[in-house]
Amino acid sequence: MVLRLLEPVVGMQLFPSNGTDLIWWILLIHSCALVSIGSLGFIFITSMAMEIVEDVERATGRSEEGLLGTVSSMIQKLIGAGGVLIAGVIITWAGFDDPGVTEEMKSGALIGSRPIVCYLIIGVCCFIFLWQSTLPINLNQEAIYNFGVIPAAVLGNEDSYISPYLTIFTSMFMHGGWMHLIGNMVFLWIFGDNIEDSMGHKKFLIFYLICGVAAALLQASIDPESNIPMIGASGAIAGILGAYLVLHPKANVNVLFWLFIFITVIKVPAFIVLRIWIISQFFNVSMGNEGGIAYFAHIGGFIAGCFLIYFFKYSHIRLFQEGNSKSFESSNFSIEGFFSQRRERDFMQEFIDTANKKDKN
Image 1 (cartoon, rainbow, N blue to C red):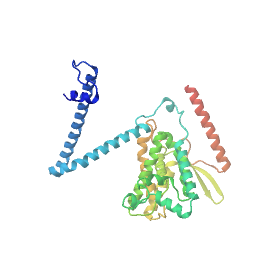
Image 2 (cartoon, one colour; image 1 turned 90 degrees about the horizontal axis):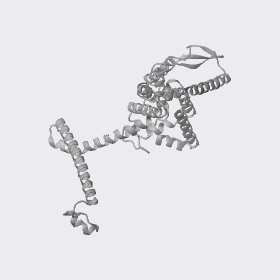
Image 3 (cartoon, rainbow, N blue to C red; image 1 turned 135 degrees about the vertical axis):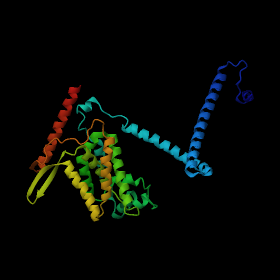
Image 4 (cartoon, rainbow, N blue to C red; image 1 turned 180 degrees about the vertical axis):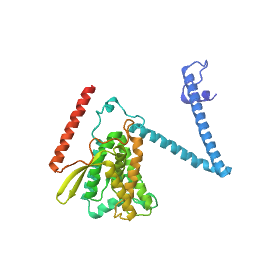
C-alpha cells in the first residue's frame, strides 16, 4: 500500500503487478537488511543498558540509581570501546602483534642497524633548543612555562597555555641549558641505539614516550601543588638506561678516569655504572639535594624502562646478556685514538653486515 502511494511522487512503478520486477526485489532486500541491522543494534544497546542497570543496582541496592547511572556508564563503555580501537591501531602500526623475527635477524645481519629514532630525537631536541636560544630571556621563560610540565596544572586546576597533558610530551624536547642538552643527548647516543635495535624503530618511539610520561607523572605526584615547570628528556632517557641495565648488564662501558695528570679509560660493566647512577638519584632525593633537578623523574623513567623492556623487545632478544669484552681493562686516552677507533669499528661492522647479507642471498 505504501509503495502504491509513493508511485506518483517518484514517477515510477514501485509495486509491480506480477511481483517479478527487479526493483521490487532490490527494495525488499534493502528493507530487510535495514530492519535486521536496526534490530541487532537495538538489542545490543538494550542489553548493554540492562547490564549496566543491573551492575549499578547490585552496587547501590536502589533501582532508581541504576537507571540514572545508565547514560553515564553507557558513554564510558563507548569511550572505552573507542580507546580499544585506537590501541589496536597503534599496536598494529608499531608491530606489537608481530614478533618481527626473521632469518636475517637471527643470523645477526640486522644487528647494528642505524638508530633512526635516536637521530630524530637528538635532531628535534637540538633544533628546539636552538629556537629557545634565539628568544629573549623573558620569552624563553614564557616558553618554558607554556610548554613545560607544571604539576599543579596536570594534577590540579592551574591554568595552562595548552592542555596540561600535552605538555608532558612537549617538555621532553626542551632543555634549560647547553650542559643539560649535551648531557642528555650523550646518554641517548651511547645507550639508545642498542635499545632501538632490540625492539625496532616504531616500538622504540612509543617506549621512549611512555617512559617520559611515567617520569613526569611520578615527579608531579610528589609535589602536585608545584607551579615550577619541568622540562628535559632526562626521564625518558632514564627509561633507556633502565632497559639497558636489564638487557646488557655485563656490557662494558668506557669510563674516563682522571686523577691530576693521570688520565686513562677503564672498561666498567654497565650494571656497576647504572646502579651507581640510580643509587645516586635516591641518595640525592633522601638528602633533599634536588637543586632544580627532577630526581623523581629520573627514578620513575628508570623503573618504567626496566619493566617495559620485557614487553617491547623482540621475542628472540634475551635478557641479561653477557658482555663481549673483558671488564676493568684500561687503555691510554686520546681524542684522536678514540675517534679513529670509532671509525675503524664502524667500518668493520659495515663490512661484516655486508658480508652476512651476501652470504644470505
